[in-house]
Image (cartoon, rainbow, N blue to C red; front, side):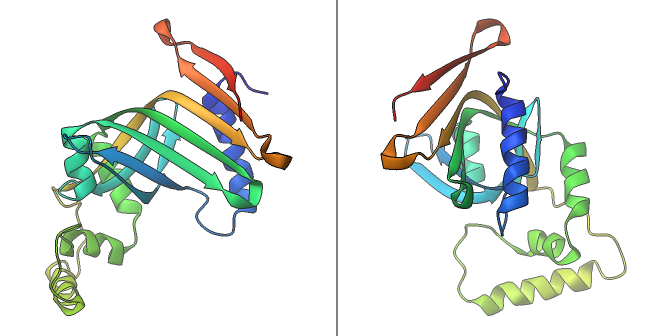
Length: 193
């Protein structure tokens, strides 16, 4: 077993990519506003390396506002078919403009246009309003590349704690934790099920 939680994550993610039928990179992202009111939603992991775990969003969305007010978060990967989950906690920071541009360029054209058309998390009177806005963006960028909207970017969670959970019979689960110690080394331990 690995003593580096990033390498262990890579191993588990590779197994999930081979076994999960849909979106093995789906993760629950929990944030809280300035008053501590929590909210959670599913997002997609779009990058992982030694610096952390990256995802992208509209900065004016509810999650964007919560991150601006309280830049701490938790992630949860749950792979039911493997009977495993990983919890990760840490601080969030914005990705660079270059990273956001590079990722945005990989999205489908309709996803790019949708990022321009959507006021994510804001009230919407009816679906037709959004579809009209989407059509207007399609016309606006006809014949050209779609640039990244100024209000759309990404965040990276820098881990301070990992928990690797494996299901066991009779609820005698295995819970392996890693916490970031002073000096940047990982301290490893176990938790009772």
